[in-house]
Image (cartoon, rainbow, N blue to C red; front, side):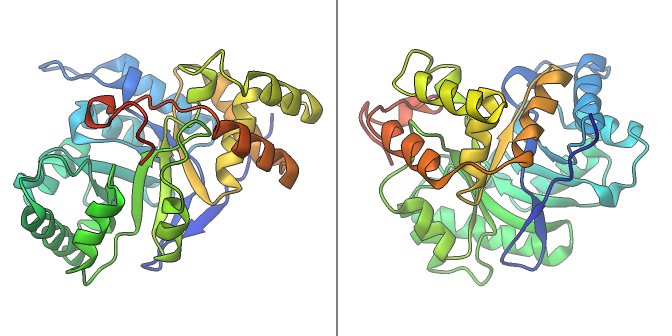
Length: 294
């Protein structure tokens, strides 16, 4: 299969982000104390790079920034061909935490630095202080773009009150069974904030047996693509950047096949409307009431 050309999406700071990313969390996390590099992790990330993925999404809390950096270096490709994301674990350690991540990655800068979640902040003032620290990191050149992850509307409103640099990204769980509170995605996009998503394949994994099983299978069959590719394209056509992962090289090629077609607007609408009839949150479930779609 010839390498798929992955398009980019413009960010509000003049930079751009590839429209799909490879996530190094979930099954690739390795939080063990260790002195040696986990070669299995390195090779998995290198397989993703060989598949054509250049947008690699990591985090301090995943415990594998070292392997992430080794994989990029061993790929033999220039650093500027990659879009590297990592996330701060503890907002109380900003702005200094970026230096630890850069050391582990063995890089001079990251393309995107995110606050992993807002829940470590004691109050709104601490959220605002953390964001000002993020702005200083961007100004220092250690991160080309800055943003947040898992921020709800109330958290975004808090930091936008004092922001001189608007977040470029909000990375959240997003899929047909969790489309967030009505209007939140469009509100972010109207503010110039790009949504990147994790858990985008939930309807086919943790949500198997839900009302979208049949429709997604039918759409995939009509286009001659995988069901995973259908869900990835559903996100892409809403200007959401999916972050997904797999330890299988063949599965990654399957994901990238989403860029070879566009779904019909009626197919997008069908997935969206049926998805709204069924609620499933796959991550950070302890922070939300059972029926909370925010």
